[in-house]
Length: 365
Ligand code: PMP
Image (tube, rainbow, N blue to C red; front, top):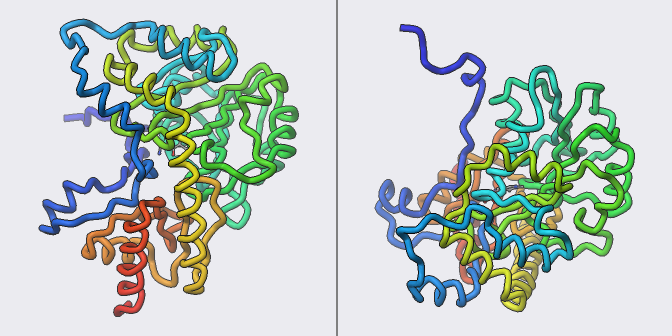
């Protein structure tokens, strides 16, 4: 029989998520596990989320609000924009999907970085779109000139993650202004700010503040990282209302469920909790980075809640050895196969990681 999978889909390497704790427990029979693999907020969401969940006023037999009115209204106030400039997704991942499915076709071309968030490439392959993956400088730092140079007459989408995953690098304000003004106006520039809350560099400016520089700009945000709601699945895009209306053509009416809409609203309202946990994460990020650098390892400076660590041994080998110590980190694909990505955890989790890491690196290669 002919295979059911379309030939171009064979080029897709499925997204490799962080290994779940339950899986490690099952496979290795370990009880105590530390997961530092998916860039979640180790300090968790505001306790108001747990209270809201326990309140039980959910009416699960009713469909969710298809227009996510309350959440979009609150986000509108939060960002000082109109609610119709916001599209909500089942995670920001879904918004990336919308962009690929709605905005491009045929020979349209897309541009993104390498290494960067793998879903930009997955979208291009799935849509059979010509694309250019622009190498980062020294594998870590954005090269805005090269991104601009990669734009061709057929380019319709350009993705940058700022700060970037998995490197933690960022585009400072002047280079971001350059990108937003020099990329030809027909191109939709997508600035994915999944980690924006953790960026504290003096010259970091969110693209939400530079929207006046270009019409075709979409900024992606998520509740999965700093807000601590990765399991709830809410993300959103901010863009011109015509684009939002076009993306809504494809969006399933109930893509964000009732509980997700409510919990995102509750999390958004507790900015004090967000700020506290972000501050604690940044503190931990810097002390973990110092501890790893003291060991003579190359650790990329990070504006996010994770660190990319270059190793003297293949990253997958170290990842496997750490699993046996009950510590889950993230192995990397080429060109970062000599590295692991470590999410910043609670102080005690980071201490446990360092101990396990020392044992693994001292052990036989
Ligand atoms: N963008 C970036 C840069 C990410 O790292 C991630 C998650 N790893 C996402 C988007 C998707 O996040 P979510 O779908 O949970 O909002």
